[in-house]
Image (cartoon, rainbow, N blue to C red; front, side, top):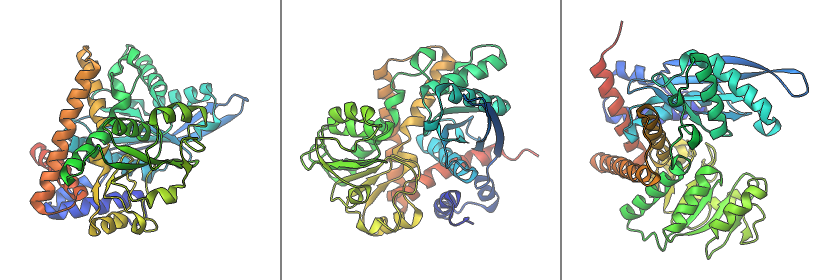
Length: 417
């Protein structure tokens, strides 16, 4: 059933394995492997030099059986419909694993935001939102930040939507500034979730977090916060690599100093004086307890998987491991916590933000973190319990949990015709 060689095909391969374990009936199988809605829009904007550029944007609502679509908007030159569709599907399973009442969606615009001014980015954001406005809303589809978008971009999304409907609607997006109805703890939530997944994995594997060694790929929002919070548990973050280079220190890197260093050096850890240079390739070969890929998808492939010597891989990024590489790691006994579980802290906190906006009452940061802790531990236990029940790996178990929840509700709701 899988369209091999595509990101969406990789998602389908993972789906198929779990669906067979569940003996999923053909009709439900077809429904759950077909995107509900795929939107392609053209976004013409006037650039600062006066010329007109037309950008292509996408919004995919993969499945909204459990609730409104939920998923980020990314700005990147390599955005494609295949990628956005796969990420929307992963969001479907991630929301189901996290046990939050959302379906899966994703958006993206083909552009290079590093070459655009703030005014151009605002114009692009507002035009993109205007083009997809009929498809989004607090009860339809709730966007969020993703690659190369942030709280400011979400503020523009919220304002554009609010201008169209004629009243302020904070719950149309999550990941907003706190002043505009954002949630305390939201920015750190994905990284905090990765930390919780790492900590729970250590307990599962019988490892001591105070003696654990960790290597992290990526030092953006997820990688940096994961590293910071894991270091606070007493673990040694011995290596970090990103798009420009990496740094290694066997005694443990000073994460607080790195957090100051990176923003002043092109948002990269390359050249950090507190360690020796290391490449992405070498980082994957390190003998550590935990390897955390927290960059982009398809980073662990059959080219580098045989060289991975970590005891566990905690997927901070979306789709960082190809199906073949995952199978290889599993056969070698590497414990892999899949993206749809490991990085579900972000969507869980997004759900909290949406609830607070709709309720009009906001929680303290400690309340948010406590609720996130409870949801993440609950999700980890559900997946590890399923893995034990069927004697399967954690990725397959996560899909079994997620697909079973969406399939059950699909059957209950029946088919509208």
